[in-house]
Image (cartoon, rainbow, N blue to C red; front, side):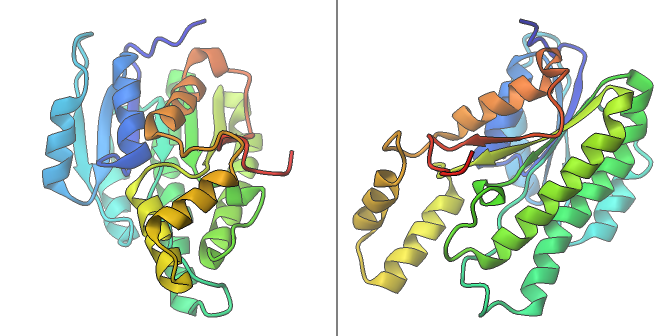
Length: 259
């Protein structure tokens, strides 16, 4: 199985922590040249030092805030580097019931997730077409298959991103470009910690009680580590996944009850 990514250029969003960072580290280990993307330059510099360079890789970073799509577009529209891999990943919307959500929350999430994803695709796909190789991988959520309680805005926007992705896969497949979604379940990240704290606060339960209840709902009876999700990302980015296109891949320990 060919998982080698030597001479491949990958742009990885949200790559200073969690699944984004784990994905950047994994792709670098497979030989890819990484461009880290996040809004905190200090953290970007720290992660840059952690990336593998033993195979002659050259890494860099881009400071960008996904709440400012115009700035992102300006920084990426004239890129001279041909990218082979794009990992779309950014922090999820705030938790809360959908009825209580404001219009601004939907607009903000739509901008951060779908609009910025599309900006990056518009900037990078021409290079993928020239190279005859493209992997667009969107880190979304299992809510694409089964809406999650208390995550109203997230459920809505994630579904929009999944349908955008499937449409894109149908259009770009002819160019050797695949578009797939990785759907993390409960993963040990700062995002999960925030969700647990929010549930504990609203229910009056302890952090441990909330965690145990969540784990009991997962057949694997544990949370995932970011590296486990990154393994799925790395496979989909490789030559070995060349005929996998337009699918949703849950990495959730079996929690999602639908097929």
